[in-house]
Image 1 (cartoon, rainbow, N blue to C red):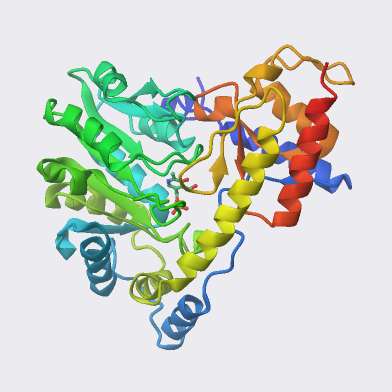
Image 2 (image 1 turned 45 degrees about the horizontal axis):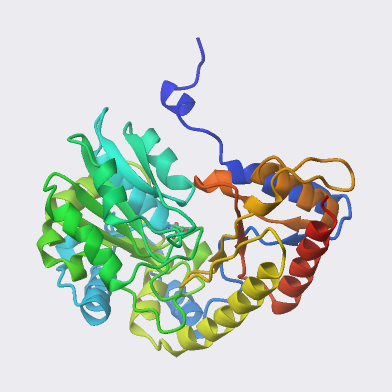
Amino acid sequence: MSFLSETLSRVKPSPTIAVTTLAGELKAAGKDVIGLGAGEPDFDTPENIKAAGIAAINAGKTKYTAPDGIPELKQAICDKFQRENGLDYTPQQVSVGTGGKQILYNALMATLNPGDEVVIPAPYWVSYPDMVLLAGGTPVIAPATLENNFKITPADLEAAITPKTKWLIFNSPSNPTGAGYSRDELKGLTDVLLRHPHVWVMTDDMYEHLAYDGFEFCTPAQIEPALYDRTLTCNGVSKAYAMTGWRIGYAAGPVELIAAMRKIQSQSTSNPCSISQWAAIEALNGPQDFLTTNNAVFKRRRDLVVSMLSEIPGVTCPVPEGAFYVYPSIAGLIGKTTPSGVTIDNDETFSRALLEETGVAVVFGAAFGLSPNFRVSYATSDEALRTACERIQAFCAKLT
Ligand SMILES: Cc1ncc(COP(=O)(O)O)c(C=O)c1O
C-alpha cells in the first residue's frame, strides 16, 4: 500500500511540466531556447505599486492579518467591483487569497462532495480539472470548437448539465485561447443557468483587463443579476498589474460561501502576504493608465504572432479577443514527417519536435483539453516572438 494519499492518485502531474523541463534541459545544454510557455506578463510591476509594498514594509505592516484579507483591501475590492463591473458587494462578501489559484481551490474545497460535477468548458486552464479532482468532485468537460472560436454555445452547456452539476467554471478572456465571450454570447449561457437553479457559476475573470479591439468585458452576475446569489466572481492582480509573484487573488460572492472559504484558509495558509495586500490596494485604487499602454504592446504582439503563424500552410490561427495567448490548430500538419524522421501524430509530438529541432518552447493543446493545437504565450519581446515565429515557419516548411 502506498504511503501517499489516494486523492493524489486521481490527479495527474501538470502536463506542461514535461515541456518546461525539456526546455530547461536544452537551455542548460547551451541550446538557444525561446520560451513561449510562460503565463505571465514580461512587464515589471508598476513603480507606484512597488512603492506601496516598500512603504508597507517600512511602516511595519509585516504581521499576520485577518485570514482572508485586511479590511482596507476588501473595501478596495468592493469599490473595484462597483466601479468596473457595476456589482454591489460588501466586505463580508469578499475573500482575499494567495493568488487567484488559492481562491478557486478554496471555493471548490468548500463546496464539493464526492459525486458532485463541475462543468469545465474546453480548452481550459490546466488547473481546473485537477483542482476539482483534488476537492473530490468530478470534472465534466464541455468541448468548444475552433469553428466557434473556442467558445461553448448554450446547447453545449445545456448538454453538460446533469442533476449532479454544482458549478460551471467560466473563464473569459480565456487561458489558453484568449477567446472572450461577448455580452450576447454570455447572455446565452446565463439563460441556460437560469433554467437550472441548482448550478452555481465560478467565473474566473483573471484576464478582464487584457482585451483588444474594443472587446467589452462582461461577467455573469453583471449580465444576469438573477444569478448574483449563486455566482462567485473571482479575479486578481497577477496578470493585469504584472504582479504574478506577489500572490494576491480575490473573489466576491454569497456570505456563507465566503465564510466557508475563510475557514479553509484559516486552517491552511492563513492570510496572504501582508505586504502584497497593501500593494494590491495601490494596484486597484491607483492610476490605471499603464493598462492602456501595456495593452497596446500586447495587441501589437498578438497581431504579429497571428499574422506570422497564419502564413503557414496547415496552421489555422484565430484572432483572440484578449489575454496574451494564441491557440493555433495544426490539423493540417498531422501525419507529416520532420527531416529527422519524426511523424507528427499529435500536438504533443509536434511541440516536442519543435522544441528539440528549433529551440522554440510552446505548450501542446492536449494539456488544455483540445487538440491538435498548441498554445503560444506572446508575453515576451517582439524580437523573440518574430524569431520564434520564423523558426516555427521554417520547421513547418520542412515537414513532408
Ligand atoms: C485562467 C487563470 N486563472 C487563474 C490563474 C491563477 O492566477 P494567480 O497567479 O493569481 O494564482 C491563472 C494563472 O495562470 C490563469 O491563467
